[in-house]
Structure formats: C-alpha cells, structure tokens
Image (cartoon, rainbow, N blue to C red; front, side, top):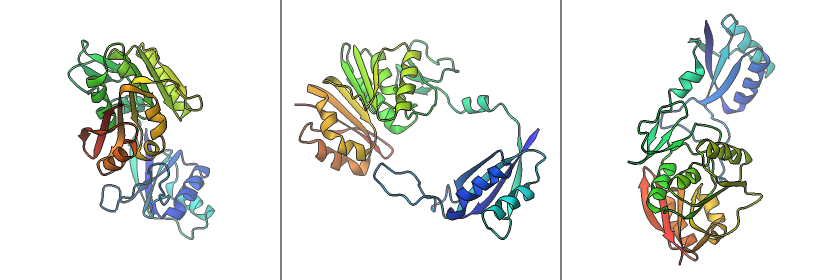
Length: 296
C-alpha cells in the first residue's frame, strides 16, 4: 500500500491555519517546514531562552499525508476555503510506501564511540565493544543522546576528570547521560536536576536501564550540597543567570565544567563566573566549547 505525500508552498500567516484545516478535512498528518531549508535563506526558529524569534517561515512548505484513495485536490480545496483562500494552492504528490517505521527510525541511530573505553549504545544494538563502558541510551524526549557536540565535550571531560569515589552533580541533566556516565566512570554518589519534569522521568528510566543509582530531581526541589564535580550542559543564557547557584554546588577544590556555549560566547561566560571559579577553554568541537575550572 502506498500513501500519498502531498506538498505545497504557503506563507507564515497561513501555514498553521492551513494545517489545522487539512486535519479537519481528513488529512492523516500535516507538518510545516522551511521551504528554504538547506539554502543560505534558511531561517532558524528556536533560540535560547530569552531570545526573540519571528514565529514561522515566510516561505513555508506544508507536507500532508493522505490515505491512498483520498482526493488530494478536494482535501486541499476544502482546507483552503475553510481559511478564506480563493484558490487551491498548487501541489505535488509523491507515493509513500508503507514501511516498518520503528525499524526505519532505529536504523538511523548507531552506537557512538566517545573514546577508547566509552560508547553510547541504543538498546536495540549489540555493543561493538563489550569490554568498554557502554551507556545504553535510546533517543527520546530529553536532550542528550551523545550525538551533539556539547554532549560529547562533556562526556570526554568527565572521562578525564571523574575519579573513583567522587560526588558528581549534573545540573540540567536532560536524558541523564552525563550523570549515568559519571556513575559508570566510578563516581560514588551522583545527582541530577532539570527544570523539565519529563526530562527527569526520562533520566530516571535511563539510569535504571543502566543499573545506575542516582538522585534525579525536578528543579522545583533542587539538589542541595556541594560536590567534587559539577557539570552543566545547558545554554549560555541560563548559564549566565544560574552562575551563583551552579558555583555554590562546587566544593572548594572541586571541578566545574560548562557546555552549551558557542565559541563567541566563551569570554563572556568566563567573565561572569570569574568571581567564583576561574574558567578556561578545556576543549572545543565545531562551534561549541567546554569551559572548565577548579574552585579556589
């Protein structure tokens, strides 16, 4: 069986109303894409907290999934009339063969080698190196699968800096990958905190899957105390605001690592943290840096 994949162009003001109308008219799904994606005119939609982005793409592409026997022209015409358009937009149709979508999605995620002894392995894969430290982690709702440069930077830093018996705090834990890695690297006590309750639940499930005991909590009930190692892989705006709170969790002589920072933001973050902890660039990958330092 082949489904119908229908696509057409519109503008930012009509994109969302058109998608809603298409679903009312019988479409199985409708999504909005940047029609200029992959070109110099591509427009980012998501910035850091506190930044302002113009919602929607002025050159929008709507992709609609229809039943095999649906009348595409009729569905689009009904949706267009519902939002006050005088004419049905010009569209194209591609056949979309039925597939095992779970298997197709899983095939896009292979094990990631972080270092000689550290791997990130999706649960449906065999480990390429059973003797290594294998972090079992599936892509999910929470950030941190090991593929993003900032996560890799933090994992590599933890491998170099976590010693047996350390206490570790993952500030903004996301999927829990950094907390789990710290525990597997020998930390005696690991905690994590995140503003997103769904991330906390994902982190708890991932910790259990990896046989790791960690104190993982919503930031509404913040983790207390000081730690030998604190790592925060978030974004530069919250890192600015949270500097006093993050530094307060690092014991004297303890280590702090920050990531989620673009190269051009590094000097400003170093200056902000200077009253508590002197930081310097520990590593960089692509346009991202990891800042680290020891609390006096």
